[in-house]
Length: 131
Image (cartoon, rainbow, N blue to C red; front, side, top):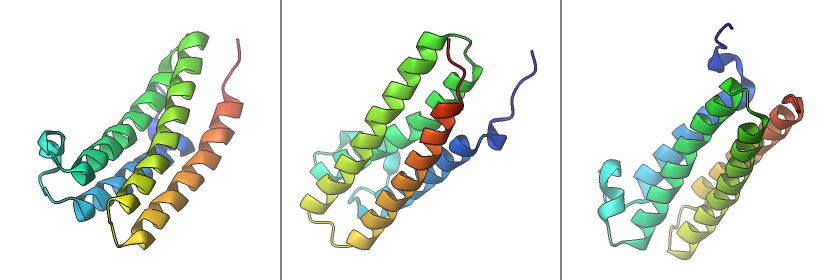
């Protein structure tokens, strides 16, 4: 079986773009500039930013798992998991706004990126082989 190059999978590339944008926004809005230690913070903003980073890092991982698994059940589980993370990311944007992030245009850019990813994700899930 030949190994697929994930970089040729459009939804995977979109997931990496979403991840990069989330990292930039998290770095900008957090009080703790060490992104690897956000989980230790007591700041709600830092906790939301950490969750945002965690979910956006997991999405390309789940896409990769889905691309390489032969198990239909695992594909469905991963797709469901990604759908939950997409909803979470939108909630994190709202949470950051409510926590006082003034630069709403950055959050709106992230929302646009989420919508773009969602379209690519929908196309990809429609192309997955069914059992």
